Amino acid sequence: MLYAILCYNSEDVVGSWTKQEDDEVMARLGAVQEKIAEAGKLGPVVRLLPTTAATTLRKGRDGPLVIDGPFAETKEQFLGFYVVDCETLDEVLDIAKELQAANRGPGAYEIRPVSIFRPGALTE
Amino acid sequence: MTADPSWIDDALTAARPQVVGALLRYFRDLDAAEEAFQEACLRALKNWPVNGPPRDPAAWLIFVGRNTGIDAVRRRAKQAPMPPEETVSDLEDVETPMVERLDGADYRDDILRLMFICCHPDLPATQQVALALRIVSGLSVRQIARAFLVSEAAMEQRITRAKARIARADVPYEAPGAVERSERLAAVAAMIYLIFNEGYSAGVEEADRRAPLCDEAIRLARLLLRLFPTEPEIMGLTALLLLQHSRTAARFDADGSIILLEDQDRSLWNRAMIAEGLALIDKAMRHRQPGPYLIQAAIAALHARAAKPEDTDWAEIELLYAMLERQEPSPVVTLNRAVAVAKVRGPEAALAMVEPLEDRLSGYFYFFGLKGYLLMQLGRTADARCAFDHAIALANTPAEAAHIRMHLDRLIKESAEAARA
Image (cartoon, rainbow over all chains, first blue to last red; front, side, top):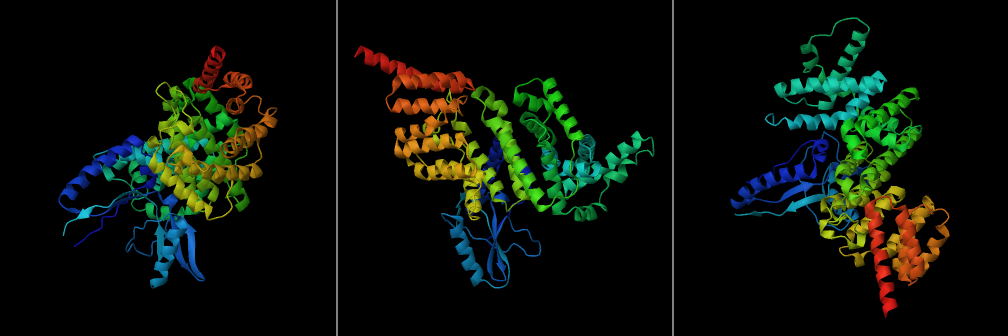
């Protein structure tokens, strides 16, 4: 069974770390990741840019609605995610709109630029 | 988590603007708000390690701070004694409705007000910056004094004076209207940029001590953007600061001389900051009406995108400066456009743009630096030397002077060689 581990923390707090503090945390996390990777159990690892860089696509009455900022509602749940490689935000939005059109129900897609991406390698 | 007490410090620092902003709204007095915040922090230091972090640290601090502040007022009035500690620190039952009552709009206006009172027009720029760092960021007087290279006593006095002015001034406590809110936002954005520039314009010997100012400005810009996520100019401001700061490690050589953008080792640029800056610009440009911060950020982005200096899209940079010139005409912007023009159309065209600015920029280091550089490229050695002499006399930092002296030395050497030949 594949599992996703989602990371939550206060952006204010993480954002106020100095570069040195941030590097230290990343080094400690890196050591843990290495161990899991050696066991062939590590898939992609992603660190996202702050929510200030987020854009959200909602279904509006007259078609898709692009909203600046993160997805703020609490009545929907986090169900899945994609990682796409695009030149511009407009290109990502086009993909998200296509996904939305293919999907059913209202829902939303939050678009977050990725700051660190490690593809990982799962065995079996 | 509880093994590491630094999470408490982190949480207190992160909550500060929101909590002090809310307490200011309750008490309508900056000193009372700050005192109440200090008291709430002391209680958090006692309470949190035992009971664990509250669900919403800011709401906890506001609640406790407000109660302790009220206690302080009562004590001064020689009224009822302080309630027992347990009743204020046990928040299990009161926290939830409290959080519900403080909705997002209140938070937003509280923080904006707190930042806004620091940019009161009566306050000179240096006082605005010092006050914001003290009140909003919570840096100690000692830290601020160190960053400004003045004594602690002098900084204490500067902040006290600024606070006294604020106390006399009319601070609007009611929720602002839309127009007022956007005016406040513009004033606060300018103040954040001022903080950043205090840190960024330093020479290398001060750069280490001043770097926290840049970090703090970025933190405040991100905070403002979280409060106003749809404002393209705040996206632009945040991007501008990130993109400029991304070059910090590449800006000075081992001797502390400034390294020009085109000579910098681009592998030292901070990629994470650049990625965030570019993402914000991409997002902001969708609004199609770029303002001054966004245009400047877009210019910085064109430098950041160029892997090598010769890849820089100078034609696009010239267009952006022309756009900026239309929005905010200033000789300094024209001077910057001239740099791009020199790259696109050569030194002669640039010099023609620069020369008419001399009256207005006769006290400006960069004017004579650029003029000298253009004259040097055109082979007008004597005129170039004259301009460089002016520039050295106007240099703000030893690093700036050293950079110009390097050009001068080269000219002197070249003319000596020419004389020998």
